[in-house]
Image 1 (cartoon, rainbow, N blue to C red):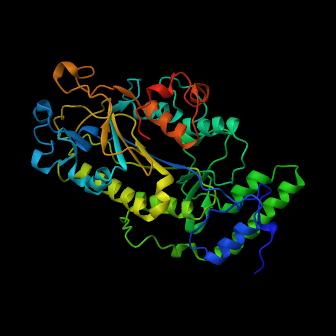
Image 2 (tube, helix red, strand yellow):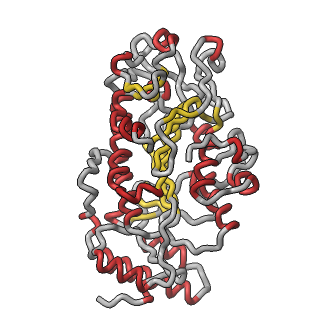
Image 3 (cartoon, rainbow, N blue to C red):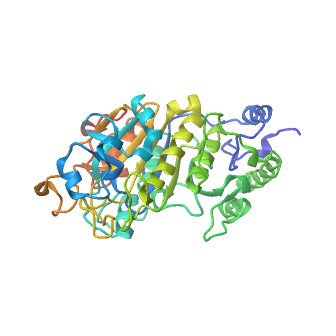
Length: 419
């Protein structure tokens, strides 16, 4: 089938929830026919652990005497901890992360979180995703504002797949003036929409182009629909990950695999977002095995599979995880933990200076706890995110950082040196 420019947007990039199942000869033809083919650059993948993961049992300060005193039944025994540096260690369910840490690809930031002390899931998630803790009036998300700041510094074109969320809805993190797509299932080409049944791809693009009076833009939209019909015939459901990428059978693993699929399709994806729930362990949290262990195993195995799946392309990819707050240092009376404060973030990337636990450790002695009950925050989570977007999008000065994280007063001189 002949390939012509009528299959492309006016910006020159194909607008399709792409698939690396696309035959190589067709990919080459598509890119050759495009006046502005997507350029591979640094890409950021953001993962939100919704529900407040227990950072103290995820990245364990196993040399802290009070850790075991405060958690008589849910603490991870020293002989089971996957030691990192003689003080911190990983939960045994995070075994997939240990080699990534040893190879210098995985960094950890402990005692990090929001300066706002709310214990409400809804408020804490909203503040963390908006990037403005304590301020409810913010309309857009920190990652959308970071893309806006990038546009002020660079006029290069972007594809419709610049910002993608795996799920039925665009998350708060990506809300804003920069268009973002929500892709629930790459195989079905379902993007955007609300509710359990996302709108078909044509509806999303019709919404994008249908109200425009620009004749050329209308034509580009029509051409895009034609391209979608053509590419559906390539059967994206037959995407094959790299042989050593063993994804678990879970929703989160499916999302990570689809992010890999979109990245490999070279559609101009710059930032991707996904999340996973199930971290609110008030009861029966478990220790080496149990509720938390099962979630951590899915979390780490899925990310490790994604990392292996990307192969050499992982050099320019950074993955960061975050959660709205941590959990109480003391276990409660039902074998769980309640809403706390500081937590731990993982940063994985080809250019990350890994093999290290970053941040100032506040200690777990009773007098060192926040409000007498939680791990204290010593690193603002926005400092971590600010460094990552700065390094990913080119060096951002204090003006750009302030636009992305208003009120945080971020300064590159205070970055942790993660990358």
